[in-house]
Amino acid sequence: MTVITMEDAAFGYDGRPVLEHVDFQVQRGDFLSIVGPNGGGKTTLLKLILGLVQPTAGTVRVLGERPETARKRLGYMPQHHHLDDRFPMRALDVVLLGRIRPIGPFGRKDRERAETALAEVGLQGSEHRLFAELSGGQKQRVLIARALAADPEILLLDEPTAHLDYRVEADFYDLLRGLSRKLTVLLVSHDLAFVSKSVESVVCVNRTVAVHPTSKLTGDTINALYGESMRIVRHDERLHAEDA
Amino acid sequence: MTVFFADLPRHAFLQYALVTGLLVSLACGVIGTYVVTRRISYIAGGISHSVLGGMGAAFFVRAVLGWEGVRPLHGAVAAALVSALVIGLVSLRGKEREDTVISAIWAIGMALGVIFIARTPGYAEELMGYLFGNILMISPREIELVAALDLAVLATVALFYHQFQAVCFDEEFARLRGLRADLYYLLLLALTALTVVLLVTAVGVVMVIALLTLPAAVAGLFARSMWRMMLLSVILCALITSFGLAASYGPDLPAGATIVVSAGAVYLAALVWRRFAAAFRTGTAGASAARPVDSARVTD
Image: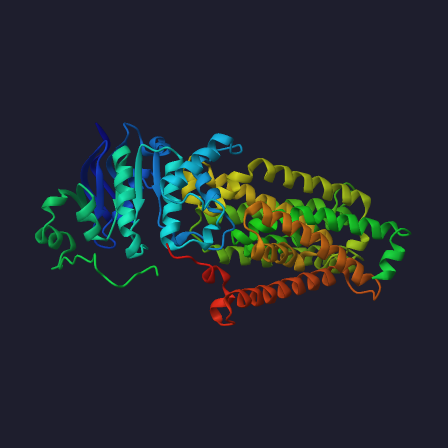
């Protein structure tokens, strides 16, 4: 069953095209990674799916509906650098926001679901820790838990591998792989090593979109995507930890 | 200080002032928490200065045109709400630079107030009261209005606490969950406007921003959730206004200014305390100790 369909979709700011002639489909249960150079339109693609921006041409359908209608059934993990790192909220308070309604307080069921979601991302016991005091990787997990607390059918993750300590990357693959068994998962990632090990197909975004199975992710496809010769480096063994 | 407590039972105006300070603290601590965490203190500053225009206009209308029902506080409420709406709409939809528009409203509001007051015969000393506060001159009628505004602010926050938190923390996510984030933002600015009016009665147009931000900023150093920050901030605000009032009375200092200086002293003391506490915990007094968030950071 097709859950996301884009037909000849386009988007641009002030007449400058960001994405053009986008035709692609996502099937229920897919585990896809969106890759491409900076400014190539990866985040814009996510925003089109979420209905945060309107296509300037073509159509976008999500779960058979307009994105604005369907988006309550989507879970979204944004990059967290836009969040105020001094905001006085505990991890559980942040996760509860996944259960927010247009009006009214949270109930017992909301709290239980939020606690389960934190456990799902491996953060049981951290409910009362301040969000600001968590490491980059832990913050990302809390934001995934916030998305999961809404019981979404599709999970969209923007750069979930960006701030990870190499020691926890393996756990993170397992987490996302586990989630992809229950949900349709789309993630934006720069990390081609992560991508080639984890996901089934890659959605290559650079002005337009092409979908390749991961097994066919060769040097030529990557060169075509990034427009220059790239060397594929497996950095499983790297010593440098971004988050340490 | 002892003079204040000796005179308190004898003078109604002292009792009115104390009650006003306590009432104002409720809204101040709660809304101050939003102003600090959502980082809209410059907006609050713009609104508070524009209030002078509204008060001046009401004052003019009452004295020159003889509309006895119009009180300066009515003008203040109207001006604050209009300014909040204009700034809110500009920040949500406008193509203009937000801070430029805030500065314009800030200055034009004050200028209109000065012109209106200059055109109203014989009341130039009122201007000082509006600018720097005259909590000792407050009347029971005004206390009623203050209490009504207080109730409106607190009831709205109680009703939408979680929604405000969602919008302040991550507006985009709140929108994705179906919240009308724009409306909540405008509502928050409207509540800020009403709170500004409350504070104008206590400390005047110029010093509102200190009372709105400093107690909440101190609370933010210690609180681990929004409602705890609000509670602590209300308590601090009540203590600071009461202390400032009492301390100013004996030596006949201006009450509003004494309250603001007290708030500043508490803020400074809290920062120093926080720094030493962090240094004590980590055993170093270096730059990293100044930011406890970093020193407490835990690796996965």
